[in-house]
Length: 183
Image (cartoon, rainbow, N blue to C red):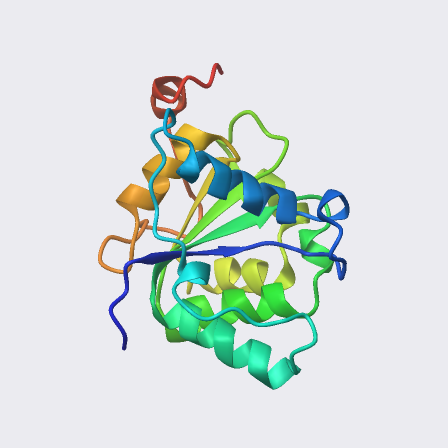
């Protein structure tokens, strides 16, 4: 397997290139945090480690590119919004390959939540590929709100050599407070 130091980011694009109509805006927010000099948020973006593909590329070409990116990743940030569970194309593939082949942890980050202390209560938002791996115990995941400091901590902490201990890990109330998240 390739040298794995990147963070792979998965999100539901909703079949559109319109950034206001899909979760790509949250991916772009992660990139903006990383690029901002006054924000402590560091990660190696796996999407930047492989040549880009065009929207007109064949499904086989896109798949090869995703596999190459995942093979170079130490963890996956899965952005979960209200429509993520409806993705039947790339998000299920990305989850399956990340967990089953790459054996990397998933940092499940939820849009619109201030804190996450009982991940099972968010089951209705999970894509089936994620839910089935939680049920079978094959995924190691941390469930966190889409908050810069929580995401930064999880990216730094969890990787293929340091996995969350269960499929339903979450930060404590004290950890949320340390990130500036009031509970």
